[in-house]
Length: 156
Image (tube, rainbow, N blue to C red; front, side, top):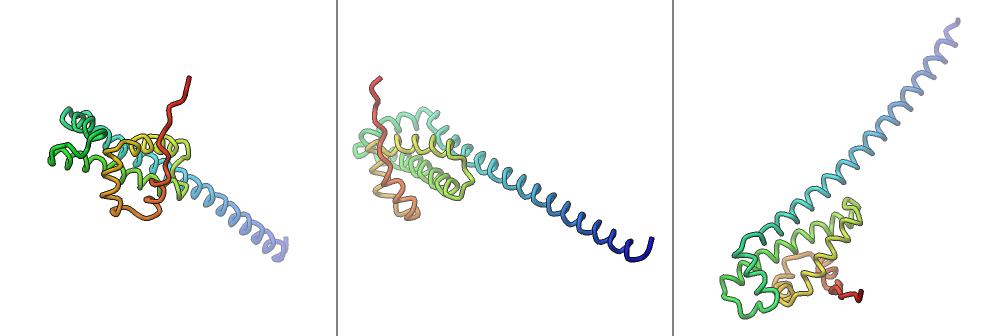
């Protein structure tokens, strides 16, 4: 075998190694993207669960029931507690909104969160909190929340 043939074989092996490396890199990037998406879903759903778990506290759940229908007549200390929970719900929803917009949150999970947000946002107490606190949120999210139609009851 002459040196030219050995050189040609070396070039072929080198090119093949580059192709294999690129395929491996593409698979690694794909796996990382999938893991990032799953991590995002986990973080959002955990935050959402954490906010809603506050309602297991009897003091908060009693305030919640009162505030969703008659926020204005609550004692000031109860208003503060309700506002805190409500703002947290909106903040978690804002994070989910941006994750969904960036493609890091599966649409079926986002749609479920939108349904819950829509229901929450339809309550008079939540709407009052939104009017007073919406300046704490980004304009795209404000526009999104303002566009949410409250849920309707379907005839069965």
